[in-house]
Image (cartoon, rainbow, N blue to C red):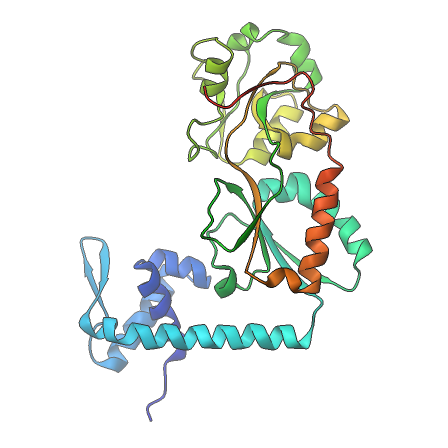
Length: 309
């Protein structure tokens, strides 16, 4: 029997699943050039191509189509066997992934209390927004912000009371005391929620407040936590999320002085595989995070909520 090129077959399976060398390389944590080299080696050993490359589009050849089902099934079985072996060795590990903003501003500052209450659990935290296959990627729990998606594992709403409003330092609030004065303020813009319609951004808030269109100028951020840090430092005013900014608001480092607030169907959700909540570390984390959220002040008193603007 010929030597099986397992590394090259793994590269082929990922590339065939994504029909993209770039996305497959990201999943396997290698460069696109390295992945392309593995595919080339596989094709040389096989004696024929497995992909058609035309006009920047990737498709399978008849041989690639024949090779894919067995390759995919084989690697699925290997992954499942590996995960079961890991679980049989220990009920003490827990892998959690969350977005960078939620990790930095909410989860990481609180994790000490979970670690103190459960010293027997080995915790691994991955800050990432990458799309996940929970089973394939070996992730126990994923915390993601977005719209409901019933097709992805088991979902728990974490913060259904989330809201968005102008947030700023107390010094900035003194300089811009009315909604109308925001036309002259240094507005900080975000594009992290452009996938939500209507989008809870400055244009949406100005419409909800009856102020027309906002100024288009200002610094733009791609990550919410960076914009929050800038607002705390007094660099400008953001349309902040209560969930991400809660601790700064509670401590007085940020204020949300204007009642008009936006609510959407999106929110933070915690995802896991069906039946996984029987795993003791997962059950412990679910109980812990639920208790932590229950202690948060929703800060809804006096808010004028808008869900369509």
